[in-house]
View 1 (cartoon, rainbow, N blue to C red):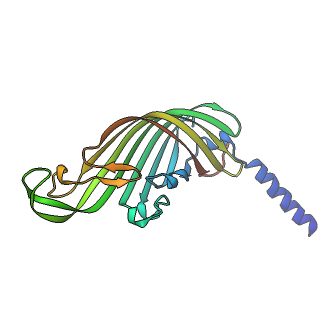
View 2 (cartoon, rainbow, N blue to C red; view 1 turned 180 degrees about the horizontal axis):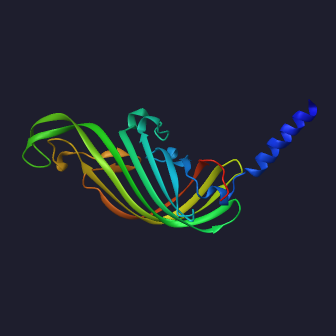
View 3 (cartoon, rainbow, N blue to C red; view 1 turned 90 degrees about the vertical axis):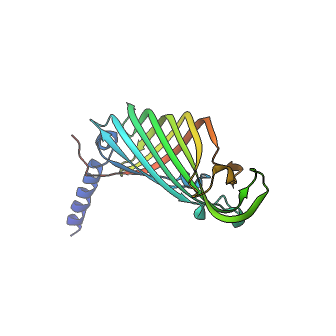
Length: 231
C-alpha cells in the first residue's frame, strides 16, 4: 500500500513539474485579466480584459472593458457631494513582445482609450428669460444629463510575468495625449440653460473642451486559459 501511494505521488509530482507554464508554453494562449487600480480612480470602474495572441504569440491584442458607478466610489466621504454618475470605459492595446525570458517578456505598443462618464442631476432653470441672466417668467425643475467624453492615445511599455501555475502579473506605464469634451443630452434645454455639475474639484459643463498630455500606469492580474502544450 505504501509503495502504491509513493508511486502515485511520484507520478503526480513528475507530471506537475513537466506541465509548469512558462513564456514559451503560454504565449499562444488567451489570457483573461482583472485590473485592480481602476476601482480606486476618481472615475472608478470594475475592469476586466482579455489578451488574444496573434501569429505565434509575438504580437497580441488586448481589449479591456469597465463599468463604474458613484454608489461604490470610495472617494466620496459625504453622500451630499456624491453625484449621480455612471462610467463606461474601453481600452484597446496592440502589443509587440520584443524581448523574452523563461518567465518574463517585455512589450511595447499603442493604446486607444475611450471613457464616457454620464452625469444626471435635477436643476432649476429659468424659462422665458429676457437674457441668459434673467429676468425670467418662471423657473422649472428639470432632469439634465451631461456626458464627459475622453478619447486618448498612449504609447505603452510593460512587462509580463508568468508563474508555473498559469497565473500572470502584468505591469505597464505609458504617455500620450487625451481629448476631453462634454456633451448635453437634456431634452428641451439649451446648453446655456444648464449649470455645471461639480465632481472632484472639476466642473463639468457642455462647453468643456480640453486637449492635454496624459500618462498611464497600472497592473493586471491574469490567468492563462487552455490546456498545457509545447509545440
